[in-house]
Amino acid sequence: MPTDDLMLGGTKKLPSLEMKGIIVNLEVDPPSAEVMEIARKELRETPDLARESMEELRNLLKEDEELTTPYEYNKFLERFLRPTKFYPESAYDLVKRYYDFKLKHWDLYREMYPSSVKAVFDQDLVTTLPLRDEKGRRVLILELGKKWKHKKVALEEVFKACVCFVEIAAHEPETQVCGVQVIFDMDGLSLQQVWQFTPSFAKLIVDFLQEAIPLRVKGFHIVNQPYVFNMVFALFKPFLKEKLSSRIVFHGTDRPSLHNYISPKCLPECYGGTMEMERIPSEKWYEVLTPIEHEFKEILKYGYLKAIAAKEKDKKK
Picture (cartoon, one colour):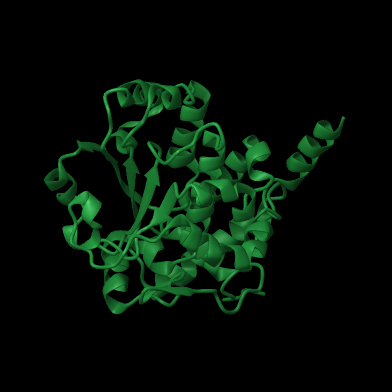
Protein backbone atom coordinates (compact mmCIF):
# COMPACT_ATOMS: atom_id res chain seq x y z
CA MET A 1 0.00 0.00 0.00
CA PRO A 2 1.30 3.48 -0.85
CA THR A 3 2.40 5.44 2.20
CA ASP A 4 3.30 9.04 2.96
CA ASP A 5 5.62 8.16 5.85
CA LEU A 6 8.41 10.68 6.30
CA MET A 7 11.39 8.31 6.17
CA LEU A 8 12.06 4.65 5.44
CA GLY A 9 13.20 3.72 8.93
CA GLY A 10 10.07 4.91 10.67
CA THR A 11 11.42 8.17 12.10
CA LYS A 12 8.48 10.36 13.09
CA LYS A 13 10.29 13.31 14.62
CA LEU A 14 13.62 14.55 13.32
CA PRO A 15 16.32 15.73 15.74
CA SER A 16 17.35 19.37 15.89
CA LEU A 17 19.60 21.52 18.01
CA GLU A 18 20.00 25.18 18.82
CA MET A 19 23.30 26.98 18.35
CA LYS A 20 23.37 30.61 19.51
CA GLY A 21 19.78 31.12 18.48
CA ILE A 22 20.05 29.08 15.28
CA ILE A 23 17.90 25.97 14.99
CA VAL A 24 19.83 23.29 13.09
CA ASN A 25 17.53 20.69 11.60
CA LEU A 26 16.22 19.04 8.47
CA GLU A 27 13.42 20.88 6.69
CA VAL A 28 10.84 18.30 5.78
CA ASP A 29 7.64 20.34 6.00
CA PRO A 30 5.50 20.60 2.83
CA PRO A 31 6.79 23.22 0.39
CA SER A 32 5.46 26.77 0.66
CA ALA A 33 3.20 28.25 -2.00
CA GLU A 34 6.21 30.12 -3.42
CA VAL A 35 8.24 26.93 -3.72
CA MET A 36 5.33 25.09 -5.31
CA GLU A 37 5.09 27.86 -7.89
CA ILE A 38 8.75 27.22 -8.75
CA ALA A 39 7.90 23.52 -9.01
CA ARG A 40 5.04 24.28 -11.37
CA LYS A 41 7.13 26.53 -13.61
CA GLU A 42 10.40 24.59 -13.66
CA LEU A 43 9.35 20.99 -12.98
CA ARG A 44 5.83 20.87 -14.51
CA GLU A 45 4.56 19.83 -11.07
CA THR A 46 0.81 19.89 -10.51
CA PRO A 47 -1.21 17.68 -8.14
CA ASP A 48 -2.69 15.70 -11.03
CA LEU A 49 0.59 15.18 -12.87
CA ALA A 50 2.39 14.29 -9.64
CA ARG A 51 -0.22 11.66 -8.81
CA GLU A 52 -0.17 10.16 -12.30
CA SER A 53 3.63 10.16 -12.57
CA MET A 54 4.01 8.64 -9.13
CA GLU A 55 1.70 5.76 -10.01
CA GLU A 56 3.46 5.11 -13.31
CA LEU A 57 6.89 5.17 -11.67
CA ARG A 58 5.63 2.85 -8.94
CA ASN A 59 4.48 0.37 -11.58
CA LEU A 60 7.79 0.51 -13.42
CA LEU A 61 9.66 -0.24 -10.21
CA LYS A 62 7.24 -3.02 -9.24
CA GLU A 63 7.90 -4.75 -12.54
CA ASP A 64 11.69 -4.61 -12.21
CA GLU A 65 12.63 -8.03 -10.83
CA GLU A 66 16.32 -7.20 -10.42
CA LEU A 67 15.86 -4.05 -8.40
CA THR A 68 14.47 -3.82 -4.87
CA THR A 69 13.09 -0.39 -3.98
CA PRO A 70 10.71 1.09 -1.40
CA TYR A 71 8.28 2.02 -4.19
CA GLU A 72 5.34 2.04 -1.78
CA TYR A 73 6.78 5.20 -0.19
CA ASN A 74 5.46 8.24 -2.00
CA LYS A 75 8.25 10.40 -0.56
CA PHE A 76 10.81 8.09 -2.13
CA LEU A 77 9.18 8.46 -5.55
CA GLU A 78 9.08 12.27 -5.23
CA ARG A 79 12.84 12.31 -4.67
CA PHE A 80 13.37 11.00 -8.20
CA LEU A 81 10.42 12.58 -9.98
CA ARG A 82 11.27 16.18 -9.10
CA PRO A 83 14.83 16.16 -10.53
CA THR A 84 13.45 14.58 -13.72
CA LYS A 85 10.52 16.99 -14.09
CA PHE A 86 7.90 14.31 -13.45
CA TYR A 87 8.70 12.20 -16.50
CA PRO A 88 8.24 8.68 -15.06
CA GLU A 89 10.58 6.95 -17.52
CA SER A 90 13.34 9.48 -16.79
CA ALA A 91 12.79 9.07 -13.06
CA TYR A 92 12.98 5.28 -13.48
CA ASP A 93 16.30 5.66 -15.31
CA LEU A 94 17.62 7.86 -12.51
CA VAL A 95 16.59 5.29 -9.89
CA LYS A 96 18.44 2.58 -11.81
CA ARG A 97 21.58 4.74 -12.21
CA TYR A 98 21.43 5.68 -8.52
CA TYR A 99 21.43 2.03 -7.44
CA ASP A 100 23.83 0.91 -10.17
CA PHE A 101 26.38 3.44 -8.91
CA LYS A 102 25.98 2.03 -5.40
CA LEU A 103 26.53 -1.47 -6.72
CA LYS A 104 29.68 -0.49 -8.64
CA HIS A 105 31.11 1.22 -5.55
CA TRP A 106 29.74 -1.08 -2.88
CA ASP A 107 33.05 -1.07 -0.98
CA LEU A 108 32.38 2.60 -0.28
CA TYR A 109 28.64 2.30 0.25
CA ARG A 110 28.75 -0.72 2.54
CA GLU A 111 29.12 1.62 5.54
CA MET A 112 27.60 4.79 4.17
CA TYR A 113 26.49 6.47 7.38
CA PRO A 114 27.83 9.37 9.50
CA SER A 115 29.61 7.45 12.27
CA SER A 116 31.78 5.64 9.71
CA VAL A 117 33.32 8.99 8.69
CA LYS A 118 33.35 10.81 12.02
CA ALA A 119 36.90 12.02 11.33
CA VAL A 120 35.59 14.12 8.42
CA PHE A 121 33.14 15.86 10.74
CA ASP A 122 35.87 16.24 13.40
CA GLN A 123 38.06 18.07 10.88
CA ASP A 124 35.12 20.33 9.95
CA LEU A 125 35.50 19.65 6.24
CA VAL A 126 31.85 19.53 5.14
CA THR A 127 28.90 21.63 6.23
CA THR A 128 25.71 23.27 5.05
CA LEU A 129 25.05 26.98 5.58
CA PRO A 130 22.18 27.84 7.95
CA LEU A 131 20.48 29.93 5.26
CA ARG A 132 19.36 28.87 1.81
CA ASP A 133 20.36 31.15 -1.04
CA GLU A 134 18.00 33.69 -2.53
CA LYS A 135 16.49 31.02 -4.80
CA GLY A 136 15.80 28.56 -2.01
CA ARG A 137 18.81 26.34 -2.68
CA ARG A 138 20.84 24.61 -0.01
CA VAL A 139 24.49 25.71 0.05
CA LEU A 140 27.00 22.95 0.80
CA ILE A 141 30.58 23.92 1.66
CA LEU A 142 33.50 21.55 1.21
CA GLU A 143 36.94 22.66 2.48
CA LEU A 144 39.90 20.70 1.20
CA GLY A 145 42.80 22.98 2.02
CA LYS A 146 44.38 23.96 5.30
CA LYS A 147 41.72 22.20 7.42
CA TRP A 148 42.21 18.86 5.70
CA LYS A 149 44.69 16.53 7.41
CA HIS A 150 45.04 14.16 4.49
CA LYS A 151 47.12 11.60 6.40
CA LYS A 152 44.17 11.01 8.74
CA VAL A 153 41.24 11.43 6.36
CA ALA A 154 41.24 9.92 2.87
CA LEU A 155 39.39 11.52 -0.03
CA GLU A 156 37.06 8.53 -0.16
CA GLU A 157 35.97 9.33 3.39
CA VAL A 158 35.24 12.93 2.41
CA PHE A 159 33.16 11.62 -0.48
CA LYS A 160 31.19 9.38 1.90
CA ALA A 161 30.46 12.32 4.20
CA CYS A 162 29.24 14.36 1.23
CA VAL A 163 26.97 11.51 0.16
CA CYS A 164 25.49 11.45 3.67
CA PHE A 165 24.59 15.12 3.25
CA VAL A 166 23.15 14.45 -0.20
CA GLU A 167 21.05 11.53 1.01
CA ILE A 168 19.52 13.53 3.82
CA ALA A 169 19.09 16.74 1.78
CA ALA A 170 17.18 14.71 -0.79
CA HIS A 171 14.47 14.23 1.85
CA GLU A 172 13.80 17.98 1.97
CA PRO A 173 10.96 18.98 -0.39
CA GLU A 174 12.29 22.52 -0.85
CA THR A 175 15.72 21.17 -1.75
CA GLN A 176 14.14 18.70 -4.20
CA VAL A 177 12.49 21.62 -5.97
CA CYS A 178 15.11 24.36 -5.71
CA GLY A 179 18.30 22.31 -5.73
CA VAL A 180 21.72 22.88 -4.20
CA GLN A 181 24.80 25.03 -4.70
CA VAL A 182 28.26 23.73 -3.76
CA ILE A 183 31.22 25.84 -2.67
CA PHE A 184 34.63 24.17 -2.87
CA ASP A 185 37.00 26.18 -0.67
CA MET A 186 40.53 25.19 -1.62
CA ASP A 187 42.34 27.73 0.56
CA GLY A 188 45.75 26.38 1.55
CA LEU A 189 45.68 23.36 -0.76
CA SER A 190 49.22 21.95 -0.75
CA LEU A 191 51.14 19.95 -3.30
CA GLN A 192 51.11 16.97 -0.92
CA GLN A 193 47.31 17.14 -0.84
CA VAL A 194 47.17 17.41 -4.63
CA TRP A 195 48.92 14.03 -4.87
CA GLN A 196 45.97 12.43 -3.07
CA PHE A 197 43.77 13.01 -6.13
CA THR A 198 43.79 10.28 -8.79
CA PRO A 199 42.04 9.80 -12.13
CA SER A 200 39.93 7.00 -10.63
CA PHE A 201 38.75 9.27 -7.79
CA ALA A 202 38.00 12.05 -10.27
CA LYS A 203 35.89 9.66 -12.34
CA LEU A 204 34.07 8.48 -9.20
CA ILE A 205 33.04 12.05 -8.36
CA VAL A 206 32.07 13.02 -11.88
CA ASP A 207 30.08 9.81 -12.44
CA PHE A 208 28.20 10.44 -9.20
CA LEU A 209 27.36 14.03 -10.14
CA GLN A 210 26.47 13.35 -13.76
CA GLU A 211 24.67 10.04 -13.43
CA ALA A 212 23.58 9.11 -9.92
CA ILE A 213 22.82 12.12 -7.74
CA PRO A 214 19.09 12.48 -6.98
CA LEU A 215 19.23 16.27 -6.66
CA ARG A 216 19.27 19.33 -8.88
CA VAL A 217 22.84 20.64 -8.56
CA LYS A 218 22.70 24.21 -9.83
CA GLY A 219 26.31 25.32 -9.43
CA PHE A 220 29.83 24.42 -8.32
CA HIS A 221 31.86 27.36 -7.10
CA ILE A 222 35.63 27.04 -6.66
CA VAL A 223 37.00 29.67 -4.28
CA ASN A 224 40.44 30.50 -2.84
CA GLN A 225 42.10 27.99 -5.15
CA PRO A 226 45.92 28.19 -5.42
CA TYR A 227 47.74 27.61 -8.68
CA VAL A 228 48.33 23.92 -7.90
CA PHE A 229 44.57 23.36 -8.08
CA ASN A 230 44.97 23.38 -11.87
CA MET A 231 46.62 19.98 -11.51
CA VAL A 232 43.58 18.67 -9.67
CA PHE A 233 41.07 20.04 -12.15
CA ALA A 234 43.06 18.54 -15.03
CA LEU A 235 42.16 15.10 -13.64
CA PHE A 236 38.44 15.88 -13.64
CA LYS A 237 38.20 17.69 -16.97
CA PRO A 238 38.29 14.65 -19.33
CA PHE A 239 35.21 13.16 -17.65
CA LEU A 240 33.04 16.29 -17.66
CA LYS A 241 30.07 16.59 -19.96
CA GLU A 242 28.96 20.00 -21.19
CA LYS A 243 26.07 20.39 -18.71
CA LEU A 244 28.21 19.82 -15.63
CA SER A 245 31.18 21.73 -17.03
CA SER A 246 29.01 24.79 -17.66
CA ARG A 247 28.04 24.87 -13.97
CA ILE A 248 31.59 24.98 -12.62
CA VAL A 249 32.75 28.52 -11.91
CA PHE A 250 36.20 29.58 -10.70
CA HIS A 251 36.16 32.61 -8.42
CA GLY A 252 39.49 32.57 -6.60
CA THR A 253 39.35 35.45 -4.11
CA ASP A 254 36.98 37.51 -6.27
CA ARG A 255 34.02 37.81 -3.91
CA PRO A 256 31.85 39.95 -6.23
CA SER A 257 32.17 37.13 -8.77
CA LEU A 258 30.78 34.66 -6.23
CA HIS A 259 28.03 37.12 -5.32
CA ASN A 260 26.81 37.02 -8.91
CA TYR A 261 25.64 33.48 -8.13
CA ILE A 262 24.93 33.52 -4.38
CA SER A 263 23.65 36.61 -2.58
CA PRO A 264 25.96 38.09 0.10
CA LYS A 265 22.97 37.97 2.46
CA CYS A 266 23.24 34.17 2.41
CA LEU A 267 27.02 33.98 2.85
CA PRO A 268 29.31 34.31 5.89
CA GLU A 269 31.85 37.09 6.20
CA CYS A 270 34.73 34.90 4.99
CA TYR A 271 33.08 34.90 1.55
CA GLY A 272 32.32 38.60 1.59
CA GLY A 273 28.84 37.96 2.90
CA THR A 274 26.65 39.77 5.39
CA MET A 275 24.92 36.76 6.91
CA GLU A 276 24.47 37.43 10.62
CA MET A 277 24.16 33.77 11.57
CA GLU A 278 27.32 31.82 12.25
CA ARG A 279 28.61 29.07 10.00
CA ILE A 280 27.53 25.70 11.38
CA PRO A 281 30.53 23.51 12.30
CA SER A 282 30.44 20.00 10.88
CA GLU A 283 30.31 18.56 14.40
CA LYS A 284 26.90 20.19 14.91
CA TRP A 285 25.54 18.47 11.81
CA TYR A 286 27.03 15.24 13.14
CA GLU A 287 24.93 15.71 16.28
CA VAL A 288 21.83 16.09 14.10
CA LEU A 289 22.55 13.14 11.81
CA THR A 290 23.73 10.44 14.20
CA PRO A 291 20.39 10.07 16.05
CA ILE A 292 18.85 9.05 12.73
CA GLU A 293 21.75 6.88 11.58
CA HIS A 294 19.33 3.95 11.34
CA GLU A 295 17.77 5.80 8.39
CA PHE A 296 21.07 5.70 6.49
CA LYS A 297 21.33 1.98 7.21
CA GLU A 298 17.75 1.50 6.04
CA ILE A 299 18.65 3.13 2.71
CA LEU A 300 21.33 0.47 2.22
CA LYS A 301 18.73 -2.32 2.34
CA TYR A 302 17.58 -1.51 -1.20
CA GLY A 303 19.14 -1.79 -4.62
CA TYR A 304 20.47 -4.64 -6.75
CA LEU A 305 20.49 -6.97 -3.77
CA LYS A 306 21.37 -10.21 -5.59
CA ALA A 307 24.41 -8.58 -7.17
CA ILE A 308 25.40 -7.04 -3.83
CA ALA A 309 25.10 -10.45 -2.15
CA ALA A 310 27.39 -11.89 -4.83
CA LYS A 311 29.95 -9.17 -4.13
CA GLU A 312 29.78 -9.90 -0.42
CA LYS A 313 30.23 -13.61 -1.09
CA ASP A 314 33.30 -12.97 -3.26
CA LYS A 315 34.72 -10.70 -0.58
CA LYS A 316 34.59 -13.53 1.99
CA LYS A 317 36.43 -15.98 -0.24
